[in-house]
Image (spheres, rainbow, N blue to C red):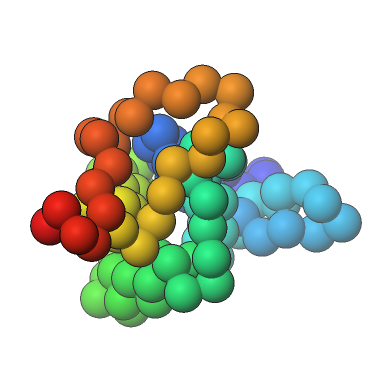
Length: 115
């Protein structure tokens, strides 16, 4: 019997109980794969990406040994959405003006000068 792929999708975070092989997702209940901002709504630099990746690792580590289920994935996705919002509000992340839809889904951007 094949493993079941669990996934959680928020606006800016996609989580899968899978690994990537040759560009395809292969269900793997022991691995969690993260896709950040799949619609390219933001302009990312390595510092902002690493902040989200680091928070992801913290959240996964804090649940070490527990089963990955839909609820757990939604919790992690929601926490990461909060991390993205915090980066945006701190001026460490910017909206992508070339995004196919610029709808300020995380609130209006603020620059460090207006904080």
